[in-house]
Amino acid sequence: MKHGKKYVEAAKQVDRSVAYEPADAVALVKKTAVAKFDETIEVHIRTGCDGRHAEQQIRGAVVLPNGTGKTVKVLVFAKGDKVNEAEAAGADYVGGEELIPKIQNDGWLDFDVVVATPDMMGVVGRLGKVLGPKGLMPNPKAGTVTMDVTKAINDIKAGKIEYRLDKSNIIHVPIGKASFEEGKLQENFDALMEAIVKAKPSALKGQYLKSITLTSTMGPGVKVSVAKF
Image (cartoon, rainbow, N blue to C red; front, side, top):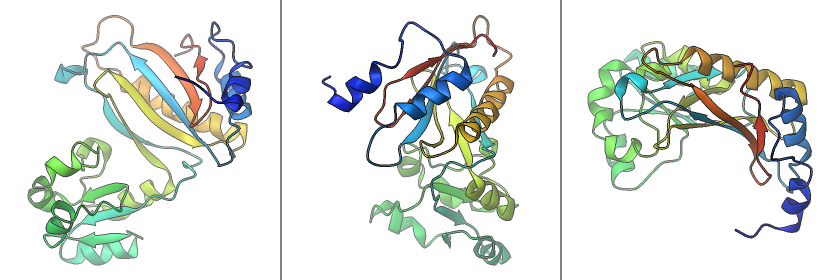
């Protein structure tokens, strides 16, 4: 893959043979984010889990203390008084059965997170083939299937992110924007890592965290030392 001049210049600042301390990695990622837009800072964690085994699956959510820097659109499936509650809490879209054809047939996906009350999961389940592959299916572990829609919406708007293993047993999550101060990115990184360490499956034998890489949208990857975790 051929990289542009800016990337090549930025990459020269990163020593690929070194696993940096978290604070140094954050500083370096900020320094090498040189695109014209405000790049997203992401963490990629390679685990020793085998996600094909249910007991080694990792899935959960964490509220980043400083948010992600992204405006998140929330869709809530609810009925009765929960509709008013969701609207009052700041949901961008609220509905029920009538949203099924809009999503299924019209391909409407103008939202980032889906929350549902447990009594709506029968309806939402019919959208599994559409929402599932996009990682949008509500899930109790992530706090998105709940009767407390106010808390769910507030947490999401405050910077709650979901983490889960992908097919290669890697977790990919955003922890903020390149414009964030180093200290704020560091706090978000620490909050994420604390949640990931706690989520270690008890069934796992061998090394849990194999590698951690910090990267900006267009910048080079920076390896983070896994020693302290």
